[in-house]
Image (cartoon, rainbow, N blue to C red; front, top):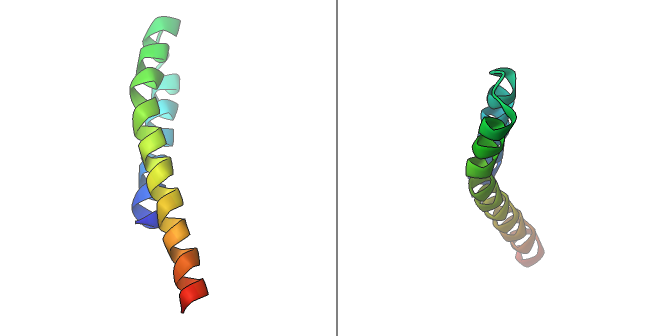
Length: 61
């Protein structure tokens, strides 16, 4: 679960980075970032939940 969240975060970084390197106009770049933000938040939440499960497993194990 944590690895899937980390993969999602890396994907979001690559997506925005490639949009910046494409030389888009300011409005097009904002649209690209606006589309990635919800996916970024979901990946961050998935990563945090996975890490919480790891910590809980260490404490209970």
